[in-house]
Image (cartoon, rainbow, N blue to C red):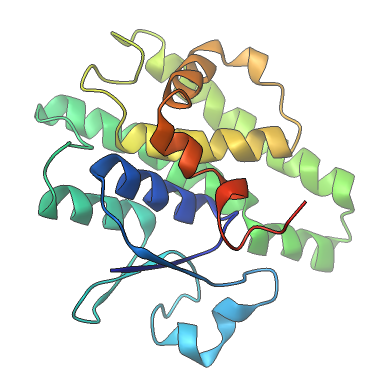
Length: 213
């Protein structure tokens, strides 16, 4: 399989983590979002939305949308599971993951921030303030959601879909200067996940297309 992604894309980061937790090796191909490569003809055949990630299967099938890809991986490679077996817990994990993937990340991703600059004249400070506001808004809800968890992670089964969403979003939060001390439960889950080698290997700065320092 081939994962078409971008080193700093949160959605690509999520899928890298899911693949790592599953122990699945794939070929990584960079799509440079900053240079607009996602709008080129080649990528348009993979994803009509001109977005990443795209998981290309061995038969040439293209899968899009990070959470849909993660669920595909969980169905095709059941162990270790990224979603709990209990239907209620599974629903709660999906709901918490969607707070990040559907409510928080889309309004502070690259194309939205570029629009704020181009159409509303926002400078770096204004763009960062926008991002911090919406991340904090989502994190406030998530903090209450995970406060009564049983164990290091959101569910006792161990790191799964939620942690695959949380860790990239914390990366963005720190990048935009959000004070994470207001979210101790989320930070504790994040820090526990970072002790696992898979999470270290999936970090944006570890990717082959990350700019050299």
